[in-house]
Length: 448
Image (cartoon, rainbow, N blue to C red; front, side):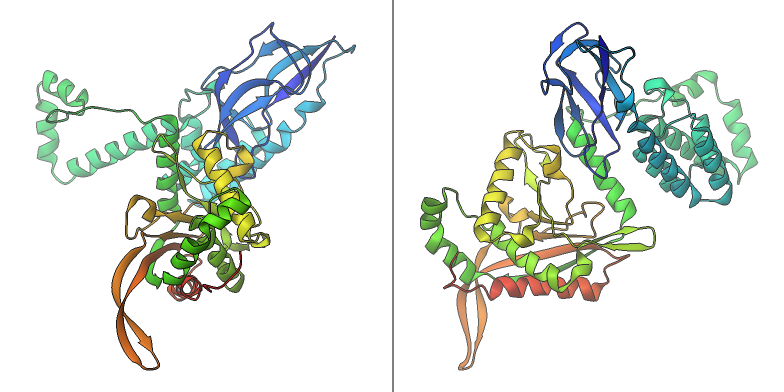
């Protein structure tokens, strides 16, 4: 008999861990090659992990809701193949992953102070405790040194510090600082507090948040928690600036109305405005490549691939961003099929991990829900996100060689939020105006 290790697979360049949602197999169950063994979740999408061998589940090493680093052995499968010892070669990917995360500890912790860096180096050498990228980011943003981080009791697997643990620590530290600051200016205040009845002190310490009126408390589901954390991190990471403009999209609207029936009959899919917007964005990114970048410390990483994410609402009300890879290499028909295919997969819960990774720029259509405009939050680690509003008929001034006239036109507001560390107002506004001009100059006699 031989024992094969089932490894937590790599799920994208920025994903370092995944949460176990459900085990489909238990110890003693038979499993076939490529048969689903468990379901996992990342901050981007849920996914299934298939078996890498045929045999019997020997051991399951993690429970439901455990957070597991990429490259970790999550189960063992006993196969019928003869072997003198268990296979261990599959364990090797785990070491580079841990090494990479430990390197990240040094980089993240080095920024607050020099002592933190020294402690981080010591931690890297010892390798006695693993910290997820999320925990490290929170620690860096809140000024928590590695010494403090090492002393935080962990409630996660094998004593790991979870997001909840570090947030509780930060909250408690802030409360302590605020209490000491408010008490320090006046010694008399301190004596009054000391003389307060014990019952009153206990009442204050055990105070529970009270909500007035008739309320219903709803706990966030897992995806909403991930979205909330992602949005807060984006605001903490990028100084957001939002620019606005409007576009006369009359030619575009009329062209789509003219061809949509023939398009659907010929291509067996409907043409929406989204691929038309993406087409215009791609053209402008080629002219302003800095918009298609990310930031690594003080290094600007300009992406040569143009991968457009499109924010898509799920039936649950949550939001996910599937990505159209190499959008610049697709014609309008290809873009349309990609847009519709990813949107359908999102609504039906069929997105794969690869469908939501690698985005370099994001489009969100707030007009779908009737909004005229929005101030979108950047989808990290990108540096810009563009929002299009509802298309409305309005009377506008039309400039012609014969003079100005007033006509009814299809108008749409566009807004773009961008990371002011990289994108200045001149570049952001120029790019946004270029996209608007691309839409306004849409050729009504074009072929698709």
